[in-house]
Length: 313
Image 1 (cartoon, helix red, strand yellow):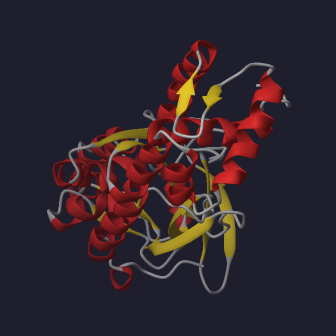
Image 2 (cartoon, helix red, strand yellow):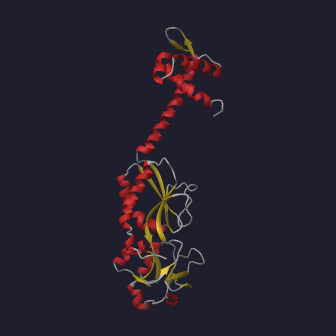
Image 3 (spheres, rainbow, N blue to C red):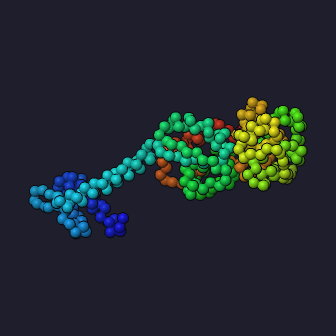
Protein backbone atom coordinates (compact mmCIF):
# COMPACT_ATOMS: atom_id res chain seq x y z
CA UNK A 1 0.00 0.00 0.00
CA UNK A 2 1.42 3.36 -1.06
CA UNK A 3 1.32 6.32 1.36
CA UNK A 4 -0.72 8.30 -1.18
CA UNK A 5 -3.51 5.74 -1.04
CA UNK A 6 -4.14 5.89 2.71
CA UNK A 7 -5.85 9.32 2.76
CA UNK A 8 -8.11 8.19 -0.12
CA UNK A 9 -9.58 5.17 1.67
CA UNK A 10 -12.32 7.07 3.58
CA UNK A 11 -13.26 8.98 0.39
CA UNK A 12 -13.48 5.74 -1.61
CA UNK A 13 -15.77 4.23 1.04
CA UNK A 14 -17.95 7.37 0.89
CA UNK A 15 -18.00 7.15 -2.92
CA UNK A 16 -19.55 3.65 -2.63
CA UNK A 17 -22.27 4.96 -0.31
CA UNK A 18 -23.09 7.86 -2.66
CA UNK A 19 -23.46 5.48 -5.61
CA UNK A 20 -25.59 3.08 -3.58
CA UNK A 21 -27.88 5.88 -2.35
CA UNK A 22 -28.15 7.47 -5.78
CA UNK A 23 -27.74 11.09 -4.67
CA UNK A 24 -25.69 13.42 -2.52
CA UNK A 25 -28.79 14.28 -0.49
CA UNK A 26 -29.67 10.69 0.41
CA UNK A 27 -26.04 9.89 1.25
CA UNK A 28 -25.70 13.05 3.34
CA UNK A 29 -28.62 11.91 5.52
CA UNK A 30 -26.81 8.63 6.20
CA UNK A 31 -23.54 10.33 7.08
CA UNK A 32 -24.87 13.39 8.91
CA UNK A 33 -23.14 15.89 6.61
CA UNK A 34 -24.32 18.36 3.98
CA UNK A 35 -24.80 17.43 0.30
CA UNK A 36 -22.31 20.14 -0.67
CA UNK A 37 -19.66 18.54 1.53
CA UNK A 38 -20.11 15.26 -0.33
CA UNK A 39 -19.97 17.03 -3.68
CA UNK A 40 -16.64 18.57 -2.69
CA UNK A 41 -15.42 15.16 -1.52
CA UNK A 42 -16.13 13.62 -4.94
CA UNK A 43 -14.40 16.53 -6.66
CA UNK A 44 -11.35 16.00 -4.44
CA UNK A 45 -11.38 12.25 -5.15
CA UNK A 46 -11.69 12.79 -8.91
CA UNK A 47 -8.73 15.16 -8.83
CA UNK A 48 -6.63 12.67 -6.83
CA UNK A 49 -7.47 9.84 -9.25
CA UNK A 50 -7.44 12.03 -12.39
CA UNK A 51 -10.73 10.50 -13.61
CA UNK A 52 -14.39 11.46 -13.81
CA UNK A 53 -16.41 9.35 -11.41
CA UNK A 54 -19.91 10.81 -11.56
CA UNK A 55 -21.93 12.84 -14.04
CA UNK A 56 -23.92 15.35 -12.05
CA UNK A 57 -27.30 16.85 -12.97
CA UNK A 58 -29.96 18.66 -11.03
CA UNK A 59 -32.05 15.50 -10.86
CA UNK A 60 -29.64 12.58 -10.43
CA UNK A 61 -26.13 11.22 -10.44
CA UNK A 62 -24.88 8.94 -13.19
CA UNK A 63 -21.76 6.87 -12.67
CA UNK A 64 -19.23 6.94 -15.49
CA UNK A 65 -17.72 3.84 -17.08
CA UNK A 66 -14.44 4.47 -15.28
CA UNK A 67 -16.34 5.27 -12.12
CA UNK A 68 -18.08 1.89 -12.37
CA UNK A 69 -14.75 0.08 -12.60
CA UNK A 70 -13.44 1.95 -9.56
CA UNK A 71 -16.71 1.26 -7.73
CA UNK A 72 -16.36 -2.48 -8.39
CA UNK A 73 -12.81 -2.48 -6.99
CA UNK A 74 -13.87 -0.44 -3.98
CA UNK A 75 -16.55 -3.01 -3.19
CA UNK A 76 -13.81 -5.61 -2.81
CA UNK A 77 -12.05 -3.28 -0.39
CA UNK A 78 -15.12 -2.56 1.74
CA UNK A 79 -16.20 -6.20 1.79
CA UNK A 80 -12.74 -7.12 3.11
CA UNK A 81 -13.08 -4.40 5.76
CA UNK A 82 -16.51 -5.73 6.76
CA UNK A 83 -15.06 -9.24 7.06
CA UNK A 84 -12.31 -7.88 9.29
CA UNK A 85 -14.95 -6.32 11.55
CA UNK A 86 -16.88 -9.59 11.65
CA UNK A 87 -13.72 -11.49 12.56
CA UNK A 88 -12.95 -9.08 15.38
CA UNK A 89 -16.53 -9.36 16.64
CA UNK A 90 -16.27 -13.15 16.58
CA UNK A 91 -13.03 -12.97 18.61
CA UNK A 92 -14.98 -11.43 21.47
CA UNK A 93 -18.34 -13.17 21.08
CA UNK A 94 -17.52 -16.77 20.11
CA UNK A 95 -15.34 -19.33 21.85
CA UNK A 96 -13.67 -20.47 18.64
CA UNK A 97 -10.26 -20.75 17.00
CA UNK A 98 -6.84 -22.11 17.92
CA UNK A 99 -5.41 -22.03 21.44
CA UNK A 100 -1.82 -23.04 22.20
CA UNK A 101 -1.01 -24.09 25.77
CA UNK A 102 2.44 -24.95 27.13
CA UNK A 103 3.35 -26.65 30.40
CA UNK A 104 6.04 -28.86 31.96
CA UNK A 105 5.65 -32.51 30.95
CA UNK A 106 4.70 -33.81 34.40
CA UNK A 107 2.04 -31.16 34.95
CA UNK A 108 0.71 -31.48 31.41
CA UNK A 109 0.28 -35.24 31.68
CA UNK A 110 -0.93 -35.56 35.26
CA UNK A 111 -3.05 -32.43 35.68
CA UNK A 112 -4.00 -30.86 32.33
CA UNK A 113 -4.46 -33.99 30.21
CA UNK A 114 -7.50 -35.33 32.17
CA UNK A 115 -9.26 -31.97 31.61
CA UNK A 116 -8.72 -31.83 27.84
CA UNK A 117 -11.74 -33.87 26.74
CA UNK A 118 -14.21 -32.14 29.12
CA UNK A 119 -12.97 -28.75 27.90
CA UNK A 120 -13.24 -29.66 24.21
CA UNK A 121 -16.72 -31.11 24.72
CA UNK A 122 -17.81 -27.89 26.41
CA UNK A 123 -16.24 -25.74 23.65
CA UNK A 124 -16.51 -27.66 20.34
CA UNK A 125 -15.28 -24.78 18.16
CA UNK A 126 -11.89 -24.44 19.87
CA UNK A 127 -8.81 -26.21 18.48
CA UNK A 128 -6.50 -26.92 21.42
CA UNK A 129 -2.75 -27.38 20.93
CA UNK A 130 -0.74 -28.65 23.90
CA UNK A 131 3.03 -28.26 24.02
CA UNK A 132 5.51 -29.81 26.46
CA UNK A 133 7.88 -27.11 27.70
CA UNK A 134 10.20 -28.16 30.52
CA UNK A 135 12.60 -25.27 30.04
CA UNK A 136 12.11 -21.53 29.64
CA UNK A 137 8.79 -20.58 28.03
CA UNK A 138 8.77 -17.45 25.83
CA UNK A 139 5.09 -16.73 25.34
CA UNK A 140 5.45 -14.08 22.65
CA UNK A 141 8.27 -15.52 20.53
CA UNK A 142 6.97 -19.08 20.77
CA UNK A 143 3.39 -17.96 19.95
CA UNK A 144 1.92 -19.47 23.11
CA UNK A 145 -1.42 -18.28 24.45
CA UNK A 146 -1.22 -19.81 27.93
CA UNK A 147 1.81 -21.07 29.86
CA UNK A 148 1.71 -23.08 33.08
CA UNK A 149 4.80 -22.72 35.25
CA UNK A 150 5.97 -24.43 38.42
CA UNK A 151 8.14 -21.76 39.95
CA UNK A 152 8.59 -19.09 42.59
CA UNK A 153 9.92 -16.68 39.95
CA UNK A 154 7.14 -15.95 37.43
CA UNK A 155 7.62 -13.73 34.40
CA UNK A 156 6.79 -10.25 35.70
CA UNK A 157 5.91 -9.04 32.19
CA UNK A 158 2.96 -11.43 31.91
CA UNK A 159 -0.42 -11.63 33.61
CA UNK A 160 -0.31 -14.22 36.40
CA UNK A 161 -3.00 -16.45 37.88
CA UNK A 162 -1.93 -18.29 41.04
CA UNK A 163 -3.41 -21.79 40.98
CA UNK A 164 -1.87 -23.43 44.02
CA UNK A 165 1.32 -24.87 45.49
CA UNK A 166 3.36 -27.93 44.66
CA UNK A 167 6.09 -29.76 46.53
CA UNK A 168 8.48 -32.56 45.61
CA UNK A 169 8.26 -35.95 47.30
CA UNK A 170 10.71 -38.85 47.60
CA UNK A 171 8.85 -42.09 46.92
CA UNK A 172 9.42 -45.82 46.64
CA UNK A 173 7.32 -48.95 46.39
CA UNK A 174 6.51 -50.87 49.59
CA UNK A 175 8.17 -53.95 48.06
CA UNK A 176 11.42 -52.10 47.38
CA UNK A 177 11.57 -50.70 50.91
CA UNK A 178 10.78 -54.11 52.38
CA UNK A 179 13.69 -55.57 50.43
CA UNK A 180 16.25 -52.74 50.63
CA UNK A 181 15.26 -50.91 53.79
CA UNK A 182 13.76 -47.46 54.37
CA UNK A 183 16.12 -44.43 54.31
CA UNK A 184 16.02 -42.47 57.57
CA UNK A 185 18.28 -39.65 56.38
CA UNK A 186 19.05 -38.30 52.88
CA UNK A 187 22.61 -39.64 53.21
CA UNK A 188 21.11 -43.14 53.22
CA UNK A 189 20.12 -42.66 49.57
CA UNK A 190 23.72 -43.23 48.52
CA UNK A 191 23.16 -46.90 49.44
CA UNK A 192 20.01 -47.19 47.29
CA UNK A 193 19.08 -47.37 43.62
CA UNK A 194 17.66 -43.98 42.63
CA UNK A 195 15.78 -42.95 39.49
CA UNK A 196 16.66 -39.50 38.17
CA UNK A 197 16.03 -37.50 34.98
CA UNK A 198 19.28 -37.99 33.02
CA UNK A 199 18.77 -34.72 31.13
CA UNK A 200 22.20 -33.40 32.15
CA UNK A 201 25.23 -34.42 34.18
CA UNK A 202 23.86 -32.79 37.35
CA UNK A 203 20.47 -34.49 37.47
CA UNK A 204 21.76 -37.09 39.91
CA UNK A 205 22.66 -34.38 42.45
CA UNK A 206 19.74 -34.07 44.86
CA UNK A 207 19.53 -31.21 47.38
CA UNK A 208 17.65 -31.62 50.65
CA UNK A 209 16.88 -29.18 53.43
CA UNK A 210 15.04 -28.93 56.70
CA UNK A 211 14.89 -26.35 59.45
CA UNK A 212 18.42 -27.20 60.66
CA UNK A 213 20.49 -28.08 57.61
CA UNK A 214 20.80 -28.16 53.85
CA UNK A 215 23.09 -30.29 51.73
CA UNK A 216 23.46 -32.05 48.38
CA UNK A 217 24.41 -35.59 47.51
CA UNK A 218 24.99 -37.62 44.38
CA UNK A 219 22.70 -40.57 43.81
CA UNK A 220 23.05 -43.46 41.40
CA UNK A 221 20.84 -46.12 39.92
CA UNK A 222 20.39 -48.52 37.03
CA UNK A 223 17.46 -46.60 35.46
CA UNK A 224 17.04 -42.92 34.61
CA UNK A 225 14.37 -41.32 32.41
CA UNK A 226 13.11 -37.77 31.92
CA UNK A 227 9.44 -38.73 31.71
CA UNK A 228 7.53 -38.56 34.98
CA UNK A 229 5.10 -41.43 34.35
CA UNK A 230 7.81 -43.77 33.04
CA UNK A 231 9.91 -42.94 36.08
CA UNK A 232 6.91 -43.51 38.36
CA UNK A 233 6.22 -46.87 36.71
CA UNK A 234 9.84 -47.83 37.39
CA UNK A 235 9.43 -46.93 41.06
CA UNK A 236 6.15 -48.86 41.26
CA UNK A 237 7.92 -51.91 39.85
CA UNK A 238 10.63 -51.77 42.49
CA UNK A 239 13.52 -50.32 40.48
CA UNK A 240 14.39 -47.84 43.19
CA UNK A 241 13.59 -44.47 44.77
CA UNK A 242 12.48 -41.40 42.82
CA UNK A 243 11.55 -37.75 43.29
CA UNK A 244 8.15 -36.59 42.02
CA UNK A 245 5.78 -33.69 42.21
CA UNK A 246 2.95 -34.33 44.64
CA UNK A 247 0.35 -34.15 41.86
CA UNK A 248 2.19 -36.89 39.93
CA UNK A 249 2.18 -39.44 42.78
CA UNK A 250 -1.07 -38.52 44.55
CA UNK A 251 -3.10 -41.38 43.05
CA UNK A 252 -0.25 -43.86 43.47
CA UNK A 253 0.06 -42.94 47.16
CA UNK A 254 -3.72 -43.16 47.64
CA UNK A 255 -3.62 -46.66 46.13
CA UNK A 256 -0.53 -47.53 48.20
CA UNK A 257 1.44 -48.38 45.06
CA UNK A 258 4.17 -46.11 46.44
CA UNK A 259 4.89 -44.53 49.80
CA UNK A 260 6.61 -41.30 50.73
CA UNK A 261 10.16 -41.53 52.03
CA UNK A 262 11.94 -38.85 54.11
CA UNK A 263 8.72 -36.83 54.68
CA UNK A 264 10.48 -34.38 57.04
CA UNK A 265 12.82 -33.17 54.31
CA UNK A 266 12.22 -30.70 51.48
CA UNK A 267 13.77 -31.08 48.05
CA UNK A 268 15.14 -28.09 46.20
CA UNK A 269 14.34 -27.84 42.49
CA UNK A 270 13.75 -25.37 39.68
CA UNK A 271 10.20 -26.75 39.45
CA UNK A 272 8.66 -26.30 42.85
CA UNK A 273 6.72 -23.70 44.78
CA UNK A 274 3.80 -21.98 43.06
CA UNK A 275 1.73 -23.38 40.21
CA UNK A 276 0.91 -20.39 38.04
CA UNK A 277 -0.85 -19.75 34.76
CA UNK A 278 0.50 -16.85 32.67
CA UNK A 279 -0.51 -15.10 29.46
CA UNK A 280 0.32 -11.90 27.61
CA UNK A 281 -1.17 -8.65 28.82
CA UNK A 282 -3.96 -7.44 26.54
CA UNK A 283 -6.97 -5.16 26.69
CA UNK A 284 -8.76 -7.27 24.09
CA UNK A 285 -8.84 -10.89 25.25
CA UNK A 286 -10.34 -13.37 22.75
CA UNK A 287 -13.27 -15.34 24.09
CA UNK A 288 -11.47 -18.67 23.52
CA UNK A 289 -8.71 -17.48 25.86
CA UNK A 290 -11.13 -16.25 28.50
CA UNK A 291 -13.15 -19.48 28.61
CA UNK A 292 -9.99 -21.59 28.90
CA UNK A 293 -8.73 -19.50 31.81
CA UNK A 294 -12.11 -19.67 33.56
CA UNK A 295 -12.38 -23.43 32.96
CA UNK A 296 -8.92 -24.15 34.33
CA UNK A 297 -9.27 -21.86 37.33
CA UNK A 298 -12.55 -23.58 38.23
CA UNK A 299 -11.33 -27.15 37.84
CA UNK A 300 -7.76 -26.76 39.09
CA UNK A 301 -8.82 -24.93 42.24
CA UNK A 302 -10.45 -28.18 43.40
CA UNK A 303 -8.00 -30.60 41.73
CA UNK A 304 -4.98 -28.86 43.29
CA UNK A 305 -6.08 -28.07 46.81
CA UNK A 306 -3.19 -26.11 48.36
CA UNK A 307 -4.18 -27.30 51.84
CA UNK A 308 -3.26 -30.85 50.84
CA UNK A 309 0.29 -29.93 49.86
CA UNK A 310 3.07 -29.73 52.43
CA UNK A 311 4.75 -26.31 52.58
CA UNK A 312 7.88 -25.78 50.53
CA UNK A 313 10.91 -23.79 51.64
